[in-house]
Amino acid sequence: MSDAAMASIRHRLGIRRARRSGFGLFFWLPAGWLILISLAAMLAPWLAIPDPDGMDFTALKAGPSAAHWLGTDMLGRDVLARTLYGARVSLTVGFCAPLVGMAFGMPLGMIAGYFKGRTGALIVGVIDTFLAIPALVLLLFALIFGGSLFIVTFSLGLLFIPVFARISRAATLNFSTSEFVLAARAIGATDTNILVRELLPNVVLPVVAYALVAVGTAIVAEGALSFLGLSVPAPFPSWGGMIAGGREELEHAPHISLAPALVMFLTVLSFNLVGDALRSRFADVKEKAI
Image 1 (cartoon, rainbow, N blue to C red):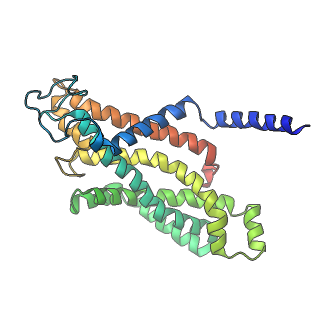
Image 2: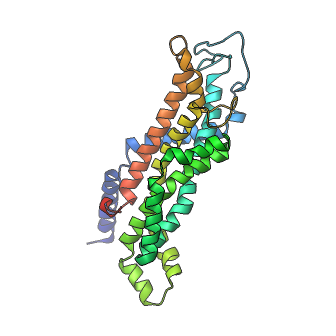
Image 3: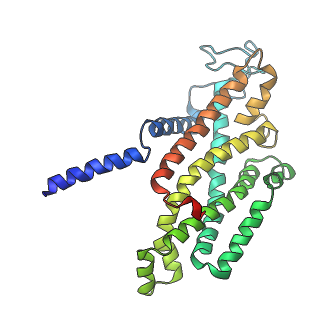
């Protein structure tokens, strides 16, 4: 068979594989939304939108208009501007909290999956003990030490440590008996080199795929804390705080709560869809191994 024919076959197989992996409309649409909302949040100070703390006393609780695309809240503040600035809080927590869990959980899981024996049993015992602690107890950090962005992010990051540890342990167990690991051990590679050079590039793929789903979970958790007044303090906008602030005006001015709620819903849904698509392609760790 000619090289051109082989290349054509590989190309068609690649297209079919991509389709099976979920890289279609339900991947690119949410990915486009995530890019859009992320850029809007980052560029919010330079966009042609009103001051998020500016008050228009001539348009209190006004509906959408040319001056205020998503209307105003009870104090006459622009809902669109506050939604975009609130996205900066939600996306910061959404991205950083899983990173905290990944930074601590992935090394622990890899060590437990590679060395097994007493070391692995000890780490698994610590992880299981950590899982037994109610999440509400860990989130009390946000209440005890005050509602700051760092405390909220770190508190939520602690909740992700055991999850990332279990996923990375399952992936390490799956790859630790592979041929490339056995070959590296046969030529005298140290355990550190095997973990870093051989296992880490393979383990990181399913971990990152799950991290995108964890971003959505962190955004919802931060929104719940904001709703309860335990996240960033007012008047700094956050999605959960905006939803809580407009809950008493749902009958007369529903846009105050519904606008940030809709943006949060679309963002979390998009992270879940993108994460599931990537996980279906890269996360080849068997569920029963977890």
